[in-house]
Image (tube, rainbow, N blue to C red; front, side, top):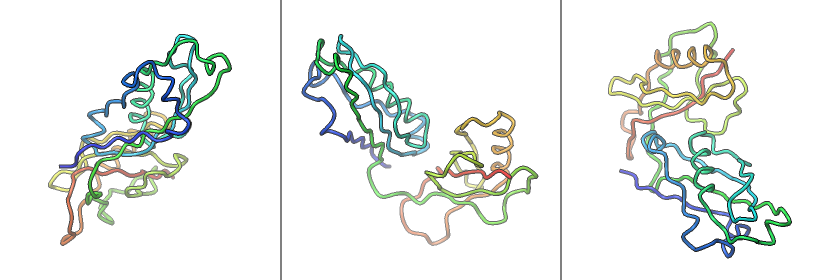
Length: 200
């Protein structure tokens, strides 16, 4: 089983010396669903410090590719507390912080699409395996689990501004596909996978 490793980067710019106490800004909690689906990524945030020492105007500057990780990063940062009355609060300094959501250990072997296994759809052009950073234009990102029969289950979509019916079509399409790991492949295996349904 993979263990959890969460790294905070951007130490040179983050105002650690201005924290109310060393323990007043701890790493955000990993969402349980993110752990089950074994999704990773890097979230870069920026924020200001209020005159009372609270975090203000926090926003995502660079997303991880997964909304749940970005929201967890924002929620974790919101709990940080700095000393009140800082000069940075008066001049509106913007600070960055980066959370690298990483699971320790080598990357597992994930199930990938078996060619020709998906039922054709008039709205779907195809499926792109394990593509983490693809543009959302023309595609819907999905994460899912793969059963022993190779069928996707527990399919979850990153909405990306698409109409609900388009998302349902993408989920329905992937549910007709079959996934697997190449016979004889060596390494730790997982039942989690992700990719993009490509729209026509």
